[in-house]
Image (cartoon, rainbow, N blue to C red):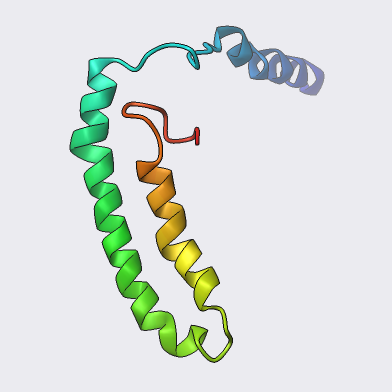
Length: 95
């Protein structure tokens, strides 16, 4: 019974790769662009605003340790590049 369940697990776990779709060359649809403009980018703006607040609040800790540039990059620059330096409708995982 254990052997059968192990074989079934292995067969089913590799099955998802058969249906993978490479859409890297495909243009984003209007639905994806609208979702990006109306949902993702405004949420990114809100995240950057909150992160800016956290950056200012963290200054008493980061200044003595001379980690201000790293905190700025982590809290402000990285999210900005993640949300706004990609084309409209492109997947969030690709940069």
